[in-house]
Amino acid sequence: VANSDGGVTLSPEQHKEVAQVAGELQKYCVSEPVKCPLIFGDWDVVYCSVPTSPGGGYRSVIGRLFFRTNEMIQGIDSPDIVRNRVSFTALGFLDGDVSLTGKLKVLDSEWVQVIFEPPELKVGSLEFKYGFESEVKLRITYVDEKLRLGLGSRGSLFVFRRRQ
Image (cartoon, rainbow, N blue to C red; front, side, top):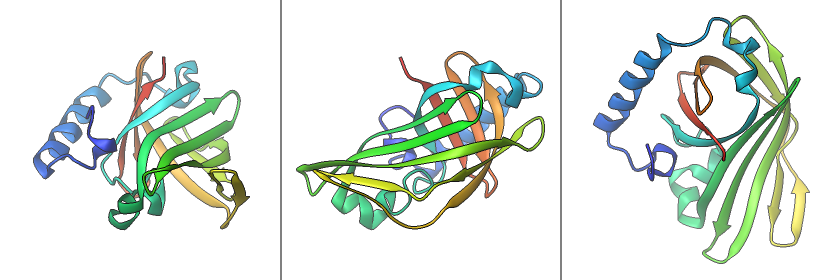
């Protein structure tokens, strides 16, 4: 998934390969991954089977014409704060980012729910909140010191790599 713009440039066959490897890794997941301290920290979002899931419209086909993604990061801070950030360059010269801060709630031994505040957009010197609260549910299917896998409630596979 390296250098695939979060999965955007992968072929359907390559997406299948990622799903197969993720399925194999899932067999080695710790029991009750939501209680594992390894979930905390800062993670690069290196892959999503539905490339618009992280970043929404900024990562859509049309959005990518205007916004080049620089990085996608998820931070999970103990005990229950989640920070998502997508940084981008707009129109080839304006740096910016869109970020979400949310509250993590454990639903069971594998599933978490995050309720996010409205997104905050920064472009150049402009900064403002827009939109509404949003909610996601994610099943943690694998976690170790370097890698975390998750499955969204709508079936999106996420691959996170711990930031150095």
